[in-house]
Length: 264
Image (cartoon, rainbow, N blue to C red; front, top):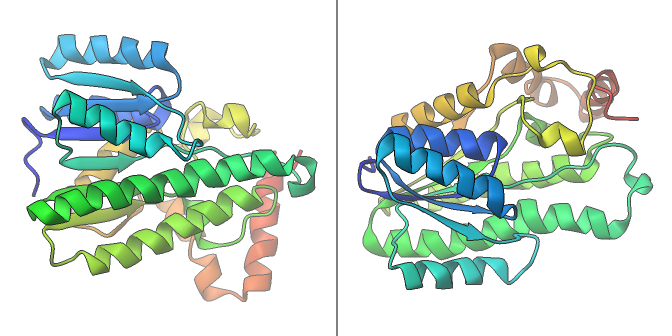
């Protein structure tokens, strides 16, 4: 197990929501952090707070992971800072709701660039470094939407399915390298995510970011490969695609999307 105290953890999408919750949970454990996000101001504010509360080193890197050059820029900056990453938390993600044809194809591609391309690039770069050292960890954040097609969030759901399958595969490939790899599949979480994918769900019907982050890290510490860091009812919903015909599962998913207000 990676000793958190004194280690360096890189968290993407770290300016708010789940990224901020992971940062707080890891700083509390004594880890030094590298926060990566597009929005610099809230990330810097979080860094000041965590340095004060936990006396850990916090560095911030402003980067847009929809840009194909961003992972290389992040790696270059870490070399300049003389920081070696021990744990990578690929948390950055975005999702559009509504009809697929109601969005521009450019915006659909941006979801793929961020959710898939950036995650794969960072996993490859840091995974190789960790494997060479014989120690490290990678946590990729997927979603409970990874288990079936998701009408009205078609591209988002497909990217999360990619993350699930991709992470399970490389976890097996890297099982003898000393690098622990896990994918977390939370359900609806009370974060700013729903600013871009508006929902009629109330925050009380979702899991808190703090709860999801805590459960994710506990599962990682246990050596879990696929984590379900949410309430039991959310995990039960993932069984539909396994137990029912796929045509039935997608219709059920469509009903849930409509109930959540995502079809509007």
